[in-house]
Amino acid sequence: MATIGVIAGDGVGPEVVEQGLAVLADVSRLDGKTFDLVSFNLGGERYLKTGEILPESVIADLRKCDAIFLGAVGHPGVAPGILEKGILLKLRFDFHQYVNLRPVKLFPGVETPIRGKGPEEIDMVVVRENNEDLYVGAGGFTYKGTPEEVAIQTSINTRAGVERVIRYAFELARQRGKVKPFRGLSDADKAKGQIGLVTMVAKTNVLTFAHDLWMRTFTEVSADYPDIKTDYNHVDACCMRMVVSPEKYDVIVTTNMFGDIITDLGAVLQGGMGLAASGNLNPLKTAPSMFEPVHGSAPDIAGKGIANPIAALLSVAMLLDHVDAPKGASAIRKAIGTVLAAGKPRTPDLGGTAKTAEVGAAVRAALEKNA
Ligand code: NAD
Ligand code: IPM
Ligand code: MN
Image 1 (cartoon, rainbow, N blue to C red):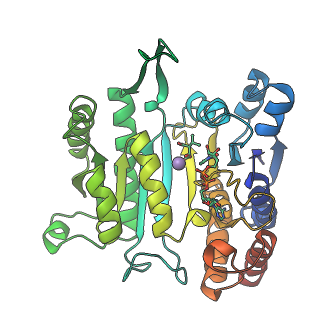
Image 2: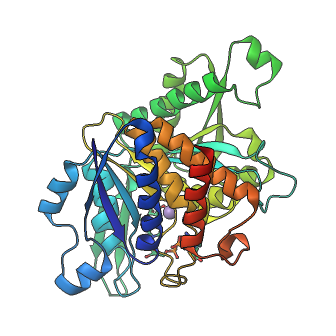
């Protein structure tokens, strides 16, 4: 048995979570597990009605879960940051989810806007630091609202925090390389026994304190992984390179802020926000990890029943991997592959006319057929 906390949240959150839970129910038997779902009413509506964002008692209940499945938070009627910081970031920090794992993988049959690139070229994972940097909320105002106003928001980077996420990236590259050596290695690399690549993405040419710490740590940690090749890109160049030569990436490790930005770009490479999944991981399992689509509450399409549920379904697959239900995870990925390769049904973001529920139903039908 595994207890899954469910935060449907705002906007399209509940629409895609509904499909995620239906798929979860269908695959639970594959790993001989039962999932006990506990729903948490959090988000804009609760806040507007009661003023509550994330009560301590709710945090305590969430902490008891084995994993959390989240739709999205963010409400047009609530000032930016209240729900995002108060719920999402609060949970990422409180539960020490220090890795934000964001795969960028193009499924066959899905069109990428990057000309001449296909699933062979677009298959990388971004390991985004998730507990530090500008996201800590260190800073404040003086003379707020006056012409002399000063606003400070500081990037916090600790040796321990940087090291643990970099180590995670190297371990992941090793794991990926053992399954299938990274396609971009030269014969000379292979002769050295290398199987994977970790590219650190930062801005060492400007952030000469914070990212000097990152670079020194990266270099030191890399010595423990002779089987993994290393590379470094400044974040601006990375944005260019992700578009021009995505095949040059295997595992990217980067800061919280840069990871946020480059993974929306990554989402586009893999067919759009409707397809990008993520896991906020506490690798030590001292608190639950949390799985969610990379996209937000999408207020522009909320309530229409046309949000693409696939990002949420892929997030459920990541959740299943985390709670030791790998058969369910691969069954979901395979069923999504079947539906995407068939070319329909597709929601409007992928050029189709289908509803969220039709895509969810098609994935469940494919699950049954593949079984
Ligand atoms: P967004 O990801 O919600 O939307 C960006 C664009 O992508 C929109 O045009 C939207 O229609 C489209 N899109 C997103 N998800 C889609 C889906 N499943 N299917 C089809 N199209 C989809 O980003 P935004 O507009 O910048 O933010 C909206 C709100 O969500 C804000 O309040 C923001 O703070 C919040 N947000 C929350 C999360 C989260 O909870 N993890 C993530 C990002 C943004
Ligand atoms: C994401 C989102 C969040 C982030 C926001 C909503 C706080 O953009 O998960 O990518 O910046 O991490
Ligand atoms: Mn983001």
